[in-house]
Image 1 (spheres, rainbow, N blue to C red):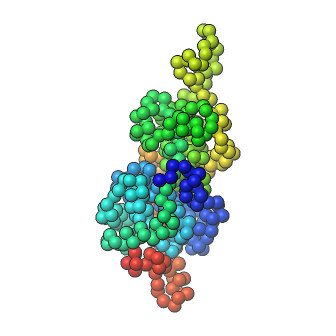
Image 2: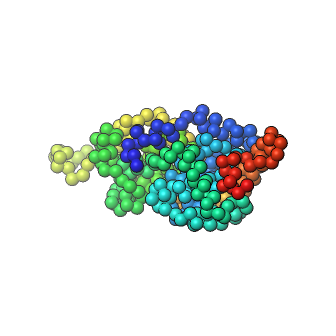
Image 3: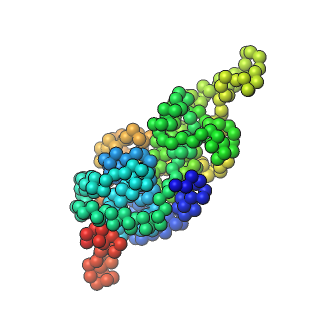
Length: 374
């Protein structure tokens, strides 16, 4: 696995611009009434991965994130209306479990996918029972991914730049793979060590990163910029982090009563100003601010997404506060049942158009024809 993001296939081939995203969804736009529904479908598919199949397979968060990135990359080259996203999701989870060394047996993936996708609101009746169909779909998936299975996530940068005030070692073991301070300085060139965040603040930043996978930010921006945007949003909006930062800064600015001591003899380093810390990073702060704005816009959109008309969809892995009232943004509430109908209508209409062009009923996507058992 590549250890340098800048020389990896992730950076060289899988960071795209918005024009590429628009081109990828161009055909889907022909079969959807409201373009905003495609943004809701991005949330819908991620909920399928993380909330349903990924958790049922007991995949780690990193494997779930990798499965999501595989899914987004696949649909840079394919359209929703031409393929079966459900079998693609299952194949992405299966492939990611192996790529991230959390292997799930193909039999379990097929049976769990059939169980989940056959329930409300999905009602997928055509999911294959034959394990070889999923294995075949995995082959097509790897082909479209161009065998680029190396994925970098924002979690590594988050732990490289931040540390828990209470217990660094236990936090790193629980949350993910950490990076040493020396390595962090080599990457960022600040020489300022790490930004101290309270455990709740670090957890909040981690959850913000989880939430970003409900959009296509992982295709648009390098993971380290997403992590910095998550830290910025945590410092601005997380109450416990605000209080801790205010207390630390107030203490740091108090005049010292005793004689001045050399920094070499200090018992602990002087607390850092989070604003100065972020400003010292060798990144484009306007770009980080733009990413933060996109994350906020994602929350505004996600607020209108409900598992049901009276949703209880909030989870410990999310920073969103769900309630049973109408969306505060004033938009229409969208449910998985609605999106399932929209997706089915898109695929049916595409199939009818394709059949009229060919003069006979055919499978929409020949690559998936055998996999779907058509």
